[in-house]
Length: 101
Image 1 (tube, one colour):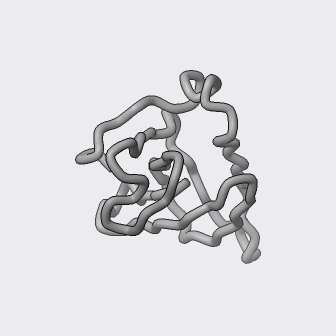
Image 2 (cartoon, helix red, strand yellow; image 1 turned 90 degrees about the vertical axis):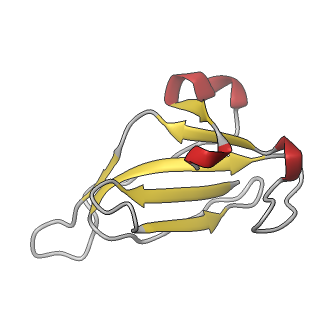
């Protein structure tokens, strides 16, 4: 899964990271509100064509809010996003087109 997190207040500020099947990723990001998009498919090709013609794109239906606790370097919000069960996507994600990714 290729994950993209875009800062809502600064659309030029985004990060990409890749999570292999049956794996967990932990990242650190700046404070802010983010949109979470991801691309998925059967087989990863490369950064240009991603998963090929069968790449599917999704967006989380809620913004993710990150903020640092006052006087601390710890995030006060932690998100765990489970992308394993496609039938549950409708509750938390909706399909988007490649140009929206």
